[in-house]
Image (cartoon, helix red, strand yellow):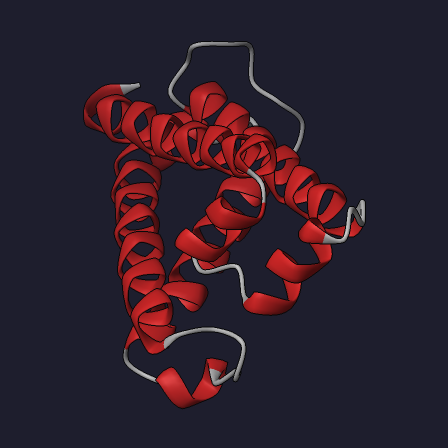
Length: 147
């Protein structure tokens, strides 16, 4: 896998950690939704006992877990997943585009999300995207034919 393997291992680990953090928010409840900046409407819905916040958060956690699995596959930990290169390009692009909100906060202006949440989450997501990009770039020749 060459020089990109460690980068994709880190990328997968970061996506997996983000997935677990989302699951922990479900268990932590409204206060955790507030702390991590999910928005007051989500926290209030959780307080009312609505299943919507948990279902949304579970869906995000599932997507992040799949993204982690693709990165681990690209790093050679598992057999190549179908559409591996295509998926890694898409995952990397999504992380980078979302992370660019750091430089264009008005693009994600939502009254229910604090500026601090938008700043920090954008910074974290941008960093994860850069790690994916480096890993993808360095493993690209090895991933040929694995799509």
